[in-house]
Length: 129
Image (cartoon, rainbow, N blue to C red):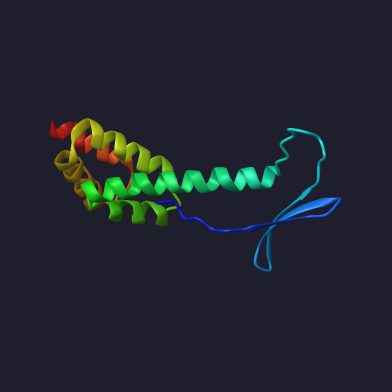
């Protein structure tokens, strides 16, 4: 169930503010034009990033539920500064293509060789079929 929260809209002749108690969450210039939509590009960018992070977490959760060993691969990859979103997506494609047991074997081999990258997992997984 989505989190719901009551906020307050405060308007004066020049500005509209969205507040949560004493905290101002957003401020926009007021428009009297009918049907006009006013958006702050920074707010849109934040929303896009939050949705991206939520999507990444859903993928990571699915991956680690199916193959718990993938968590260690992601931790090691993060330690090397790798793009975890790209790695998670690649591992999910491997999971869908080869299944959990084959992916697990490939991840274990990649970790044993200290190569926490989907390309190392792909080589091992492909060789197992």
